[in-house]
Image (tube, rainbow, N blue to C red):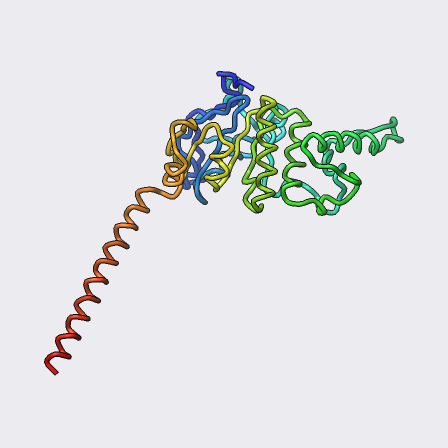
Length: 283
């Protein structure tokens, strides 16, 4: 699906301070329909703070957020959800011992009956859960089985499917593949691609440049609360992204130091061998 030129969501010069601590400084980026925007950075880069601003947990100290070109302010996560922004955090907001269909509708349970006889509509919940999971290739024997019986990749896919079902226009994924193996990560990346094809704007937060480069359309790299730039896929290579994430200048400095240390050690060892050889000759 072709992406709309108008961003679904924008961060316009967003800064966030906690007292004297600068968590973010002048961050600008946007998310477009039908695209995956990857947010990259090492630990402490400011990724978590930024997505909490996107999802209404924090409000920016400076700058503004915009949806469809209109400036907005989220005073709570509910405000963001009501505007179509769904965030899937690493803990997935699931109860492991509760059934899959109950987890799928947690907080938004369908009901049947009226007044004091209103109750959870088990049949409707099971039918919708089964249909939605069938769409992403997860076939269930029993929708009441505990969600803990699913693999890590399946749990991530269920959380994403839940957000899409409830009308997300923008889907924010916080490190969805960080604790998964290769096969499970591939399952999640395939489903992110399906979500993109539905015209949903996806923000994919990750440490893995390889996963980002496979699925991403655009990349924003953060370091110590500052943006190192935003790039289209054709504008930057995987190696360049890795270098930006790892702190290219710091690594070059370290490499020079190590090479210098190696040369010094090599010269010292060579001198020691020469001295030993001379001693043997004199002796």
